[in-house]
Length: 145
Image (cartoon, rainbow, N blue to C red; front, side):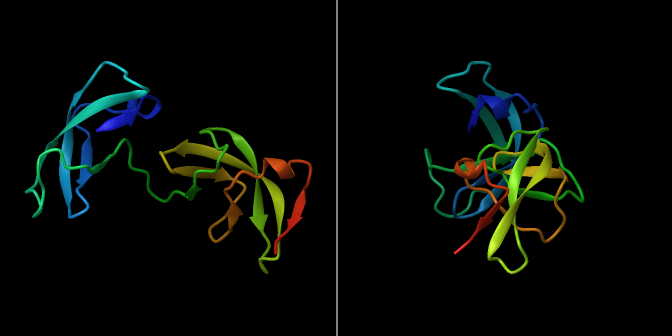
């Protein structure tokens, strides 16, 4: 797998992984990490621990996930455009009626490629806007159509 160098720093030999062939998911384990960075990525090899699904052939394009850490009972959202781990951001939280949103401070924690932990500022069921809202930086509230 090709892993972004910013994410590859946390990968260790022996970590569990999953390989999605789009025709089935195969459990795997990380067995080699290329020390070289090429075009912003590092190559990570995984040993497949299960049988290949029907239709799997050499050089098939696949997706893979390496489990870096498993967190239980964590509140998380999709990763906002400007959301960096262990930082605080202003996100627009939707009103209950969905007709408006107010900017609130949200403290972020650990992150994955597409999700980020909420440490403070949101609770289960809150809905926020994850898109780039920098054009609204001067506004504490917006109206939605």
